[in-house]
Image (tube, rainbow, N blue to C red; front, side, top):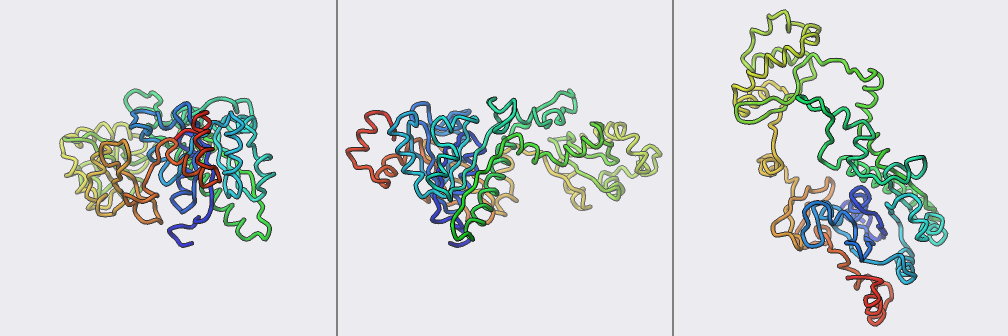
Length: 397
């Protein structure tokens, strides 16, 4: 064990699909665990593989969520498929499932059944709305929970006052990280036990969304849905050649801001001269500033604000971000070859781990069932038995 492979020697059985569960298990793989991703052979595997544009058996979602894992395709509705999974579970450290509540129990692999055979296993269940309650059985994805949790309502467009969801899978990704920390800390505790005792951990996208938005949720509740107006003109502004985000939270930014933007006459304007005045007239201040921003190039605004310690950032596209000199200078991105993808795939390097390297297990996203034959052989199935399972469509690969 070292800092680059804290979970070396551990085995994770990953039955989750989508983004939250797979990203959690992916982090386990990146830290050295042997993660065996169990997918269905007859419907395209993990449904994340078919979200958006596909590249053979991958999409952008699954390219991230499967990195470093091994994929085996098993039909768990068959007795033979169930027996394969039980073999995989033997000696496992972690079991992750993301079915709708009650489904995994119907397959015969609920916590009680699994822990009866492997008392030391850390069993992690992830769902949309939780395992209990009136909405437990509802299907759910990130956009649904953004709406349900209140995030969509708060993200109203400046020009249309209409609620909008964030295009990124932020609740999914954050919930995946919550699962990773819960599993990691559980394994840390279990390591100190003379007799290894596992545990059941449950998390939902609803809970992940609540934790992700906790500061805004608390503020909104305490302010009864009417947040106090800011006294500083922050936000996204059109410039002569694009847009810029300016973020000011300190009243002391007002003077250097006016100096940077060459609008020092506003310092004497009674509408804006004091913090209370700016707060009372913030909408008028925005209207005053918009044409001033619009007359200047983004680089001019950014350089002058930055020189005075005022936070700002050019509004980039993702491609522009990837081409930024700062991104290259900090080595936060890797560019990976992946089967079926016609060009290199940008992938953020994981803090605390070495950068991804092409040709290594960590940097490879397996195709559906890519490792089926190898895993079955590793777990005692003969070549003849594997051929029979393939012929009967119990497995695929």
